[in-house]
Length: 252
Length: 244
Image (tube, rainbow over all chains, first blue to last red; front, side, top):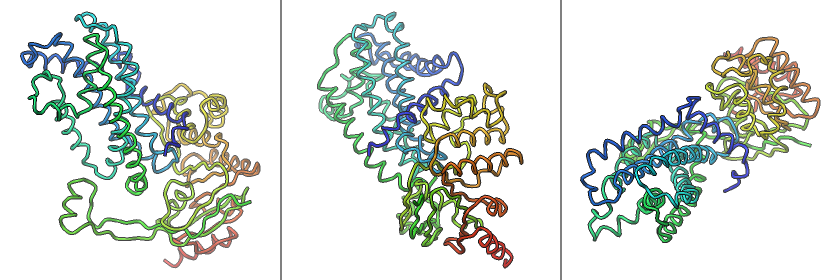
């Protein structure tokens, strides 16, 4: 089931060129990818900052939230397309199929990591406490693996259901409002909070804010919960992928 | 020793009577009594063996299952029944330049294509000059792939593939592009590799190629109709066409 991880050369090469292609030679490539979430953050901040009037450092609160969700949206929507978009690699070569979602996940994981590092001077300027920023090196890989687990489920399903793309973009939009990005967690009613916190992304987002804005060490139990969910997703993802990959060639 | 053993392979394709590629269509079709399929056997009970160091040709009418058979031998498509055994490193060339990205340079593309075909990255860099030389495109090595003609792209792909140290090459109609000179060069190269012990299984529509370079051949029309001497197989193939 994990045989494919041995093909390190293929994984690295495909990841590298996926990444390279994303910034297609434009020197400002990374900057371009920052502009969209940044404008989004400004607009939302202008409209919703009242909701956050009690939140400490609310502009950074919004910005980190937006970038966090931006990676999830981009990472899963390109992951969903990983098999369909590279159909010829499936029908004409023996490249292990898992490598397709893996390499897009890694490429987008890397670029979102770079985006967050580029935010660093801005965070310092707006008064964020970045003494634990280096923990991003641990937390971001967890996030990337979580996205990979989801992509292992989405990318084969995308082959069977071509409208999953549209459905998923709606899910993504709903998720945006299900995460504490433009409102504080305190707004969630007490009796719903337990359910609200089941979403591993809520806890993970808290951890990102802890290290990027507030200078706290993230809650270890929250991280443990996220890691557990990630492992479950990875295992379920491999099982589902293995089941569905037999039909790929006929359907592509 | 046998390089490829195909025993009693069958492949059935299910073609849905109505389309059901989206979740919405799926739900509709389940509600209206389930999906109906038309079954269709692309291959039925195909068995043959390819000896090590042999060039084996497959010929047959369109829709006769040639590509399906090659995909199964290459391990890309699972057969419904039967078994395929392969000894050695198989390099399937079912399409030239799979994974090519027109926005990237020639070198980048050679690296991508080479790794996909199972070469290590440092081996590719070592052989890069050789690959360019064989493709006769040294002067364009820094160009973006999109600026090259389709024939040139096919040349790059072909010369990359032959540098991947295969034991067995599985080739589907690969030399349809390229000019006469390059075609000749390719067949010569294949022949040379064959003399060094590489087994080749190829599909071709050209009866000339079949007669000239293959040791044995088979005529495939869902199952194997004729087998053995290329001349005999070609004769049968022509007769099959004359009947229509």
